[in-house]
Image (cartoon, rainbow, N blue to C red):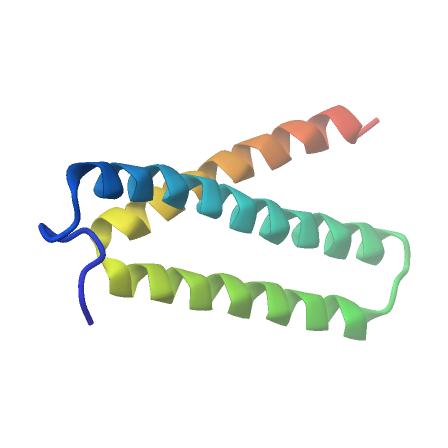
Amino acid sequence: MMNVLSPDLSHWANLLLLVICPVAGYLIGRLYFRGLWWSIHRLVNGGGAAATIAVFVLRFALLACLLVLAALQGAAVLLCIAIGILIARFVSLRRARIDTP
């Protein structure tokens, strides 16, 4: 598999890719942590365990697949996506603190 950040691409294309990857990681992370919030909210309010487990498996599998695809593109892409996911985690925790009575 070819590394996305290659010398064949122009400097601006590499820079654009390194800007897009954290944004993609942020969006992936927001979806992941929103699903986590939904699962916890459902368990606390007496929701069904089957749907909660299904959402957990789907959430975990989606994140794992996307991280593997990012890793195949190279370390820089994986790192940028991981940074975006960490930012999404920070934002999600911040919002959870605000929403909690």
